[in-house]
Structures are given as C-alpha cells and as structure tokens.
Amino acid sequence: MKVGGHVKKKQKNPAIGGSVMTETASKHSKLVFNSSETDNLEIVMLNWDDLNFFRSIAPERSFRRAAARHNLSVNTIRSRIDRLEKALGMTLFQRSRDGLSLSIEGMTALDIVLEMDSAISRLAHRPNASQSYGSNVLTLCCTDGIAEFLLAPRLPALIEVIEGNVSIHCDSDQDRIHSTERDVCIGFSRPTNPETIVCKLASISFALCASKAYLERFGRPESLGDLDGHRFIVQESYGLDAAAMRRIFGNERASRLVAAKTNSSKVLCQAVASGFGIGALPNYFRGRNAAIEALDLPIALTSDLWMSYNRMSMNSQAKRNAIDWIKDCLRQMDASLPAEGQLASLETEEGHMRQDSERTSGSISKLFVN
Image 1 (cartoon, rainbow, N blue to C red):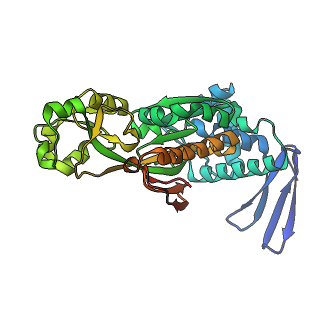
Image 2 (image 1 turned 45 degrees about the vertical axis):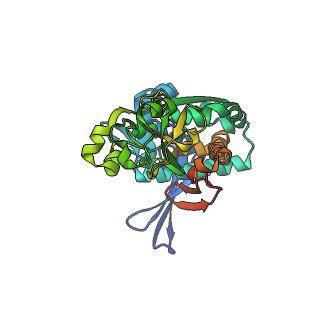
Image 3 (image 1 turned 180 degrees about the horizontal axis):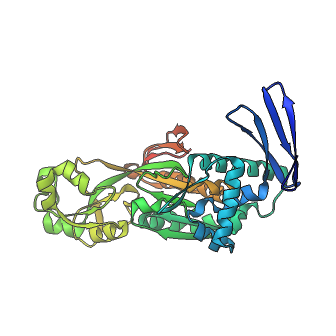
C-alpha cells in the first residue's frame, strides 16, 4: 500500500494476534513502535530532525519565542510540533494563557531524545558538543549574595571549566529564580517546576549579628529578654524572615522589633555593618567584615539552598562541568570556614529520583552535594 510517497506493507503476525504495519522512509528516519487499543503493533517512521527540533524548542515555553530564536514563523513551529505529536500519538506541550509547558508525555519524550543524542555522541566525536543548542554561554540565575560571595570570587576558574562565557543574572524573588530559561539556578526556595532537575546543595546556617558601633550605642543583648528596645532588619523570604520573627517572639513583640525589611542580602549586610540594627547573616559571611560581631543568643536559623538546572543542560559537557564546579565550590567554602561558621553536611536530591548523603567537616551547616 502506498501512502504519501512511502510504502506500507501489512503482514500477519500470529505472535501478537494482529497485523504489523511497516513503512519505508528516508535514511534520516527512526522506528518507533506504538501499541494500539486493539493490541496491534504499528511501526511509525520518525524523522530525527523533528525530534531534534522538539528538543531545541522544549525550554522556550512559547512558540513565538521559539520562532524568533530559530528565525522561523510561528505557523512553521506549530505545524512541525503538530506533525510530531501526530506521529508519536501523544501531546508534547500543554497550552495555556501563561504559555507552553511540557506535558508528562512530553517530559518523557524529551528524556528519551536526550538519551538518544547522548548515545549518538558516544559513537561519534562531535567537536561542538560542548556548545549544544548554538551557544557557548553559560547562563546562571541566583541571589545577589550567592553571586557576590560564591560565584564572583571564583569566576576565572569557572571560565576555565566551561571554556566559554558566563552570564550571571541576580534576582531577589526566590520563586522567580528557578527558571527554565537559565542553564543553572541557585536559590533558597525549593524549585517546583517538573521540567527541571533539582539538587539540594546545602543547609545554610544564619547567626544574629550587629555592628560594634550598634552594640556600643544600644548595648549587647545577653538573652532574648534583653532584645526589647533593639531593632531588627529582616529578609523577606529566608534566614530571619518575618515568619521566623513571629515564631520566635510572637506576633506583637515581633512587630515592635522589626524596623526594616529587605529582599536583598547585600542590603541586609550593609545595613547591619552601618549600625542600623540586628540581622541574621549567613555563616559564610562571618569574618568578612571586622566591624560586625555575632551575638551569643539561643536562636538557631537555617535555610536550604537549592540548585535547579534545565534538562537540556545535561546534554552539554561544559554545563555539566559547571554544575559539578558549583558543588565543588561549596565544598571548598565549607573547608575554608572556621568551625563556628561552617556549613555542616552534604546530600543530593536530583530529578526527584535519588538521594545520596555524605558527611563533611561541618561548615555550611549542611552540604547536600555528592
């Protein structure tokens, strides 16, 4: 039987109690086996270019953005995806007013395509494999504090690791940090996007701190009861935030103590150093400013630090190297801190599928990297 320029042959196959449909196509095609409701086995021909095209637009979350990136019309993008969805017999994208997102079937299909490409790369050397998706720029998104204290001092080493360029975007909105538009994201809120791979990097300890000038003016509190009359500056989403203040001091007392709020760790550090008030600073900051002292108060604060990365990043050796480099940076930071400012242990949670733990000397509070 001839259909659309291809030849299909229908044969009986007693082993499956039905017929087998075969089709010949171009040398670039792949075979996919679909089982129908009647338990017949259908062999469908797929073009690798269509699968590769699906892989390249998967992180875009918008046909319009994908069209601009590939210099194609939106209709062309839609027709190629529609053709692939019809051939696979599944819906790859979920459409909504907010844009596109991969369906469960789409995420499965993307994982399979990435595995196929990885297998092909092991068979043949590809000089530009480290520049998959047409770019040798590593894009990072994180808080300003992580950028300032973790990444910026080590940028020369990162450039050597990826053998390319890096773009660091700082965002104070914890929910917005973990975006599929970036290769790697680091923040204090747990990512919820199923299209990303998630890794818990560390549990960061925070200590109440104040400047020497502030303590000379207002006195050094020796207990929680001594804090009346003092003023606090708090973070909006991690560390000593408003919710933590209410848990520790109660609603009424917390409202009296909080004099300022910020979503920037840099603003918090500078406000504490200037003598504005008491703030909770991460232990890796301690020792960086001689004017700031930690207070000996019975308050233990920790916040989990999470890394997420685009599934597409795993197809790039340079980006995989960058992910390993970030984990190693935390180990080095942990080892360099004094015992009282350390992180504390390490464990990994990737792709919501596996967890491995590894103890360290105990510097960040807890390190969760394998």
